[in-house]
Image (tube, rainbow, N blue to C red; front, side, top):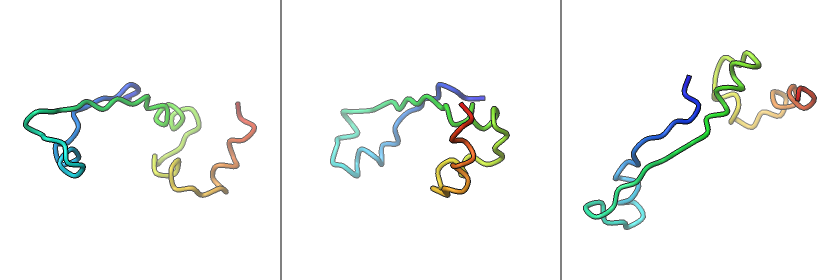
Length: 64
């Protein structure tokens, strides 16, 4: 399970904002706590954490 994921920024992202991709590159880092929550609470699909369905999110209000 990826917890502290990272990777190279796609050059198209830099091009979209006018950054010279011949001169600059970039890295992206993330905590990935969403995957740990999936395992802890048995969530089958990561998209459920981000779709904004309050019926889903209310299940976790008192679980801490």
